[in-house]
Length: 461
Ligand SMILES: Nc1nc2c(c(=O)[nH]1)N[C@H]1C(S)=C(S)[C@@H](COP(=O)(O)OP(=O)(O)OC[C@H]3O[C@@H](n4cnc5c(N)ncnc54)[C@H](O)[C@@H]3O)O[C@H]1N2
Ligand code: MOO
Image 1 (cartoon, rainbow, N blue to C red):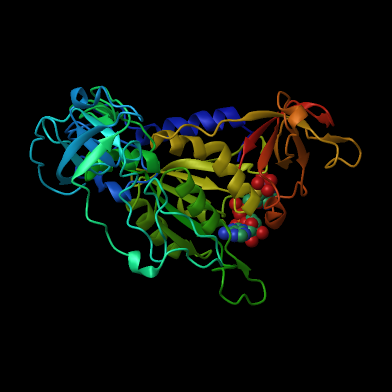
Image 2 (image 1 turned 180 degrees about the vertical axis):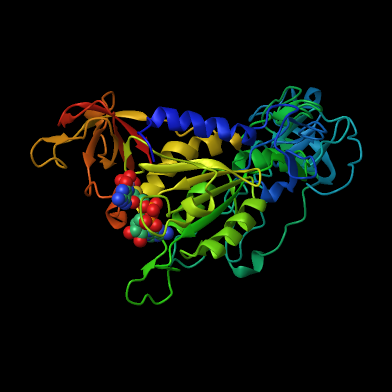
């Protein structure tokens, strides 16, 4: 395996191997049909990354409509209105939020109008129904009377209604409305294009589509969105001892944690799982499986079979790859190269090592390829609880990635770094203990001792 290389060196080599996964304009990764993007129904695009700017095909709102339930009027007809001297106007019908175009308003009249309904030509303001003698357009609920403003009076739970049930149904609309509040032109109108104009930018390329982005696109009538094609990753876990979770395990068998962990990590990083396969320590079977998996994907990742044992199928079958010891713990034995043109990363089989390898070498590469921001790192202060002796020692020349848990910062600590406690042990088989962690504590290769209170870098899990 030769001498150890640094984490930085291995990361640089992995990034240069995988540069083709991050499309640059004109040189992008394609899907065999020359596409770097695909079109998805707006309802299916959650979490995907927009491949192009999305412009509004029409103004939004599409037409001038009412902001309130009330009466569409000419403002000039109601400028003199006041509670003491209401202006009476004849009511010339009703317009609701329904398909169709309303008839124009005759000057000197009012039209009942509902929220969202198109405003008739000739009307330039809406008077909310509460500002008129009508009070409300609601039907009285069964058994409820109307109060003096016309609004239904509330009936306390368990009380008997104060009016007989015969008041049900819509009272006939008044043919005259008395308007008590003056209005000026434009009041309670929603103008076409006041949200977005035709041809305006609604969503810029690169947006990671959240529900409110999808709502904006849908409201603009956009049925399909161009999204970046996701990197397709094939996953092969190796080891004759492995059985799938849920299946019975006999003597010497263990459940395959890595295929599940890697598939979930790939998806979380914005990529797509082309397939997961398990193969035993049989060179011929492994050869077939690895070639098939590589041919199906943009990237192949494997777990296991890369150290110094007698049955290292990955090393044996992928002999053209570079296998090396990286100066880190866990995750020391690493390999990279190509199989039939497809880039391959080989992660060590210990389940903590596999997951740490993904976080350290692949997570942000996949995120960048998919148009997502890197997870990045943050600073924290080492807590005392996870350090019985108040300090930890780390071997020189090995970058350690310890499992840690951030403590909730109290209000007093808002400006300070959060405290991180070491959790679980350092062993790379301690996969259940890792479930208690929410970060990896990054101890640099040249640091051999850390004390409670020291500042550290952590990588979120
Ligand atoms: N003589 C040496 N032995 C080992 C060295 C070394 O440098 N010299 N390195 C050790 C380190 S560090 C690691 S990490 C492992 C890496 O080994 P492999 O990548 O070859 O992995 P395996 O031997 O196949 O498995 C290691 C361990 O993990 C378990 N495992 C494997 N796959 C899964 C899975 N999908 N789900 C759950 N657990 C899995 C496997 O049963 C073994 O216990 O090598 C050390 N040895
Ligand atoms: O490097 Mo291994 O990944 O420590 O257990």
